[in-house]
Image 1: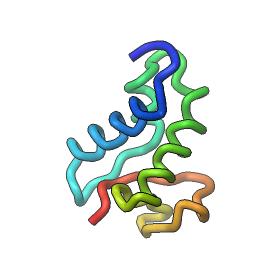
Image 2: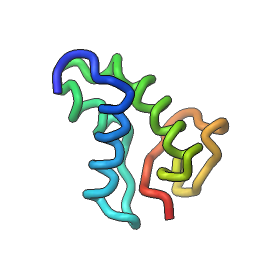
Image 3: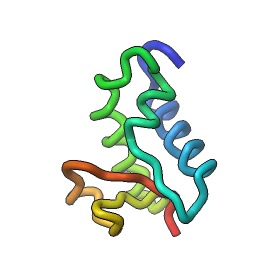
Length: 85
């Protein structure tokens, strides 16, 4: 996808990539951004992280820091995402 993806498209891509990886594996937010905009993915990173936080708040995703689940409001630095267990 090229251009300006909607929040729904970002959420769908997060869930798709994480679902493909499986419940025991995680993805990097940059994988989502690169899938949506291969040539200009960096500007999407904030939006991907915001939608991942929303999905975590809804109970659909887990945000991991150093391999441990964290609350969306504690999200900072390097994180990974996985389907909620």
